[in-house]
Length: 496
Image (tube, rainbow, N blue to C red; front, side, top):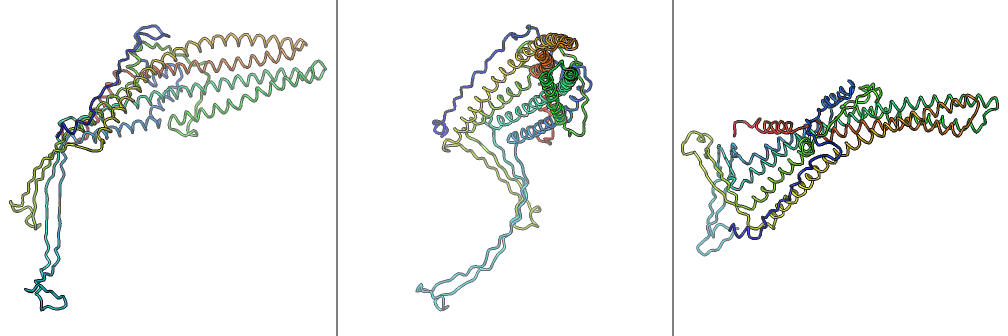
């Protein structure tokens, strides 16, 4: 029967090839092994801002995304216990108290001729049975256990327990993302403050030029066109302030959300991005990065879990043996339920079930699980490529934004000298309003561009922090798995 049932089933499984050795080195860095970078608040302290360090530490304590990730760990641990329950016998107490009343019945005994007239009693006789009450009482234990010949229940348990590991890796991913979000938001606050200071200084410069042109207009050495052009520049600089104020205030509100606080309940002093230190981060080797990324570990865990799900679906094709038993007391009278030895009831049974035909439902479930494994295998390989790409991109960003900052610094210095020269010419009485306007605009723009480039430079450091796993390491992986195992073993009661 087993051979006939499995004859039409395709139980082959060609697992996708996952062999993808990492490269020996990064293109943008020297191939030297390096220890993991600092985690969370320790990494934030490298920027030299006590306020930033405090914000990151508060986010690690109160961030709601982290709280949700921790709640998902609790759910995964509970699901692991639920999925593992089939490995053990199920025992329950059965208590039955039942009374059945059988009503009286009227039986007609017909005459010898077989005639029967319901209107008369001369053709037969009737007898009426008495109504009776039947009692049934039972108190006992029932137990059932599925013999796991093919490892189906063990596979389900392993799949759920590995997903519990993945939930912890996911929490670490959320932690790293939260730290990075706080860092970048704080950098944006400082940049907005820097740009506001630059904008207000530029307004002051444009106002000084405007005052000088108005004075010359009164004595006839300047024209209305000259003052109108300068008024345009002044208005443009003033118009640049409201968007920066908006960015500053909204970013502060975003930081409050990251810290699990209302915007009204916290204050961020800020300062200047130029006052922060820039941490030097060495990426190490690609193989080290892959071992330090919790998202790679999570993708790997989900893939390993799915392999057990495939094996579980495959085991469903084979026979299952379920043992059931009952031991207790049964009696028609409650008073004799526990007092008479002959009230003891015992039942033992074994049920062997073999799927024969189910409309290819089992085959569909098996194929579905194999397809899911192929999907997760592709996502796992993609996560590896993403980790390597993130690191390369962050290294490129650090190098190129550093170059951009240096070049813009030269441009700002040159533009400042040009503006000073133009103002000197204006004070001497010679006016080239077109050249003056261009000089002012160039100086104002390059200052702002330098501030934006500095923001990109610091955000590149955050990107590299994320790309390198935010201080996560194989040791962290072992700790998380140990915590998962401890949670599985806890609160299981006296059963094995």
